[in-house]
Image (tube, rainbow, N blue to C red; front, side, top):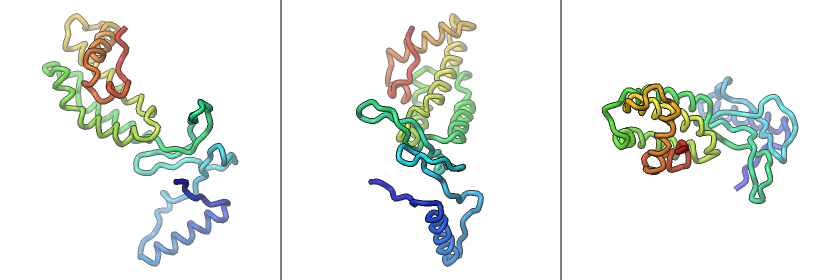
Length: 188
């Protein structure tokens, strides 16, 4: 289903004024810092306006590259996980202190963290899932740190630890949600 957009700035300003008026009738008001007119720039709307992006429900909507069914690249106005949401996920991963859980097995870690990872993948991976790549790499880096502390032969051998994690991912591809989605480290 295609959403209808205003055809001009004047039409958008009128719509905003009518919405503000309706809110006032209900005893509500629009937040001035969160309410603005955004130009949804894409292949069909190529003019230049100062505001071409907005964040809503931890998604940032903005012009993004997309590929059609014939392999042609074009610009689409689409949502993807916001920078603030990515930052919060990285902080959550850091707060898990995964690298300090040397007493846990890979299966234990999987059971502990997969419910959260599955939620992130289900919510943020729905649209423009490749925007989550940095989170999956971040998590893999913490798993490498965990391996380096857990296995004495991997201490101070980061490359070997990455290779070992890749081998674990190859032998247990369903251990973590992001590995299932194709973000497993390479088993060089």
